[in-house]
Amino acid sequence: MISIKTEQEIKIMKQGGAILSKIAKELSKQVKAGASTSDLNRAANALFAYYKTEPAFLNHQGFPAAICASVNDVVVHGVPSDYILKDGDVLSLDLGLKHKGFYLDMAFSKIVGGKPADDIDKRLVKTARAALDEGAKAVKPGATLGDIGFVIQNCVEKQGFSVVRNLCGHGIGKELHEDPQILNYGLTGEGEILREGMVICLEPMITRGSWRLKKSPDGFGYRTEDGSRAAHFEQTMAVSAKGCLVLTKL
Image 1 (cartoon, rainbow, N blue to C red):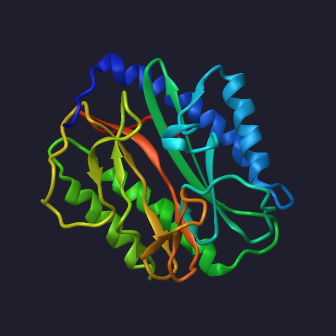
Image 2: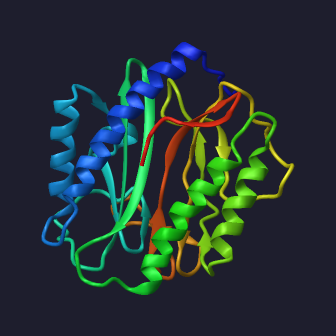
């Protein structure tokens, strides 16, 4: 069942989104070669404590960390570890919080280090972000989930990349994952119709190779079957009368 949020509830979520965006910005500054993904998790915990807020992912369905740190062929839900980041790694960080009873969720990818990055990896990350932006433009009352999936898929595939098909975006609010499920592919005019007051997370997940995934040995992460690199962006947004109201600024 899809929940419709009131103006006051969306205002609360916007406040939470502003905090999460600040945490993401500070965490992004600490992504560098020589740091471990566990270092980033410790930094995230310190930031959540500083802002006096609750990390959404810690202990969610048994997940053991405050953030997901997914490197190279890990698409999502990577568990922070002693892995040391290297120049040229593609790192995706996914983080969420709970603010006054409401959840917010966001993710971004970046290439580690100051050395010139692989041109295809740069285009991969750029395309994933562009796909999120194109999807957000389609968010408005009366549009369908198929409209969103279509523009995301088109943006990705015209660059020669693949859209992950067995993971998706989602609704969000008093639960971290709510209805509807939001595919990153589809046909215009199909699927659930968007209504004012819906709050959703768009999150394109794309790969350099096949879209097929396998579970990581830790039981949480999802990796590409063919070992190709992946990128992932996500924002929480509300459907407003004027269109898309982004609650988590990248």
